[in-house]
Image (cartoon, helix red, strand yellow):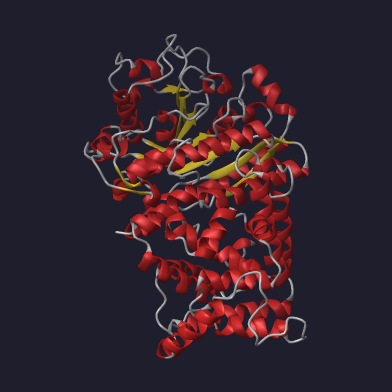
Length: 348
Length: 243
């Protein structure tokens, strides 16, 4: 995001930025726009699975969690939000779905629920991202808004959002829309780097879409520019600036950040140190971002996985007694027991 | 959340009632997280930041793993509470650090008596601080005598104003060069000089300055709260660009 040059600074050396016209922020803020749209929320729990890197296992984990939930007799709808990289249907063995998300986004189909199709598994429906028109990898703001509303209004116990790779704004917004946000990472530098990138982007996006700290938006904007000349290099810098320039907003700032739900899953662990790296990432996230991310478990590298993928069959169906299925069940059980804080339950 | 200073419990991600086993486990986990070339710090913390955090972790562990030192530490944190005349349990020591950070501490007995004698002290202070850095300390002390260290500690104890020149005096007495102090605290030499010379226009905003002073106090073993209260209030009075 480019830095808005028309934000006046009172004094460069004091790093205090004045509150100027921030209406343009509100125009891009789907969360505030949705509050004025009479959302009739029916989705009881929304889980989003992200992580910033392609190929870490988001679709696999999304589909497996979805299946696991149906075993507890919950009504589940899994949505593939990875436009241009849609794999959810493949993980579940659903061939070339007739009605997909693109039909809704393009306006061909007026309501999201018309895109729901069966998965072949009892209690599990999906909205697939397949059949995407070539070139449609970024949805417009209006489409995104329509889609967010549509998701909230789906009738289901659990809605699982399989997010795309990367940190584009739509992805971040869907992540922040959820009650529970899962970050999947592999125990390797590239994946971890992307995970931090994802957390960082979510952090700033959350701040920029929270009207309770509107006065900080100009500073947040500057902070998002990694090369800014104001010395705001890290979230800690931004927080300290807030303490200095708007001390009355410090508590609200903390509340906003603490309402970001972050749960970490390490996938394809092969050694104990791979498993342990989740704890390290958690500590570093706390130290750098001030966010309490929970490390909820790791999934061992399991040859069942690639076999299931090759066969285009759900893991749970092909290898129900495998170690990895047991691990996913454990994670699923844990997440179901979680009580989200009120601030995370949007539009209830 | 970013509020300094962190308690040792916070550094090791422990609750106040953590067992010795908890302390040990946390210590090992965190040492691992910030170890040299750890994968988990990649792209977020550079080598020197990781090292600085390792130092914090080490310090925290040294105290919390030793039952006696831990008891003392716990008590000391209870002491901070009494100064503010509020009764706070150990578990609330977390929120305490935030309050410390934001509020200008209310006057305590020590400060009150100091105010009364202020003029006298100021006079004697000026005499002391006019001593050139390179010269030997005031005639009261014989640097060679065994009492030198005790005498310095007494001076530190009695100090009220905490002018930059006094901080410099202590630094030199302890044989710490600006270079060394800079390396240990990760504060640039220019800022250290600016702090010692009280060149307010060269110093950053109070929030950062506070952090610097805390670091310097830790290395030079100075009483953080006293130094910061005195220095920052003088800084705020004098800094011309504060609106």
